[in-house]
Structures are given as structure tokens and as C-alpha cells.
Image 1 (cartoon, one colour):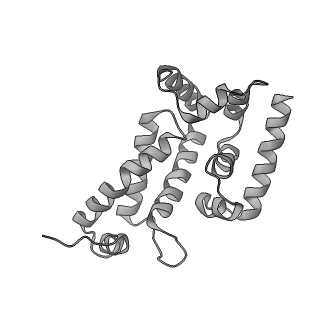
Image 2 (cartoon, rainbow, N blue to C red):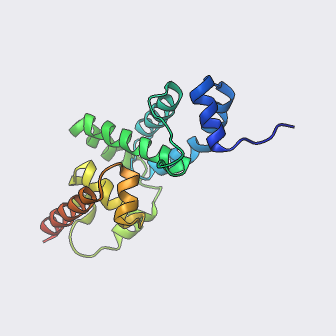
Length: 182
């Protein structure tokens, strides 16, 4: 019977020795969680699957380095990598990516998420449409601060940007939403 290794031990084994078993254990622990979190931000499962793969490939190849002091917990560190890669993927696809996302949402209309239930309850304005029209960066800040309920500092760590940038993007997003809903 083998002893369960901590996340830090697994990451050190992956970084130092390219330990495949440690990597597989890390993947089993966090890939389903990361996929579920990213699925909440992107309706296109193929994009989400690609982002999860890219996130773990970055860990395996050593492109993403975990520092026990300053990186927070492993889940948060993986989330920062994955969420940045998702923004990059969505930004890179541009209009084609947004069209694919809209079509994917139409295919999954029978699966009503909590966010969709909230949006359906809004009586004035097209909040869902206004949110979709926000840039991925502004939408990510709103999701982190409003939906996830994070503080400015926590959102900054999660998104890998300075707290001042979080505040600026949140202000810009609120302004754009107000204009869109007026």
C-alpha cells in the first residue's frame, strides 16, 4: 500500500525527475475539477478540453513553475494557468470562437446552468447579450469578483494581474454593461 503524496511532493517530483506517476496522480486529482471550472466559463467542451491539456502540458514540460511560497495552493495555481490559457484561446479565435460558443450554448439549451437561471430572471435589458459582448478580460474580472465573490486582491492573484488592473477592468465592465442596458 503506497502512501499518498502531497501536491507539493508531486509537483517537485514532476519538475525534478519528470516522474510520470506523480504527473498522472496530479492530473487525476485536478483535471476533472479544472475542466468543471473552465466549463463554467466556456460552453465549447473542445476548447475546454484543449485548455486543460495545455495547462497540464505546461506543468509537464516545466513551462509553468510552482513556487510553494507565493503561488498559493496547487488548485489556485492550476486555475490561474488554465484561466489565462482560456482567455488566450478565446481571444485568439475572435469572432469565430464567439460564434462557436454561441452555437454550443444553443445545443445545450436543455442544460440550464445556475447563471442562466439568474439571467432568465432579469426583467430589464439584455444582460446575457451585454455580458457576451464584453471582452474576455473584462468578463473574467466580472466572473471572478461578482460570480465567484472574490475580493480584488484574490481576483488579482487568480487572474495573474495587478489589483489596480482588476479595479480598472471591473469599472470598465460595469460602465459598458450600464450603457448596453440603458
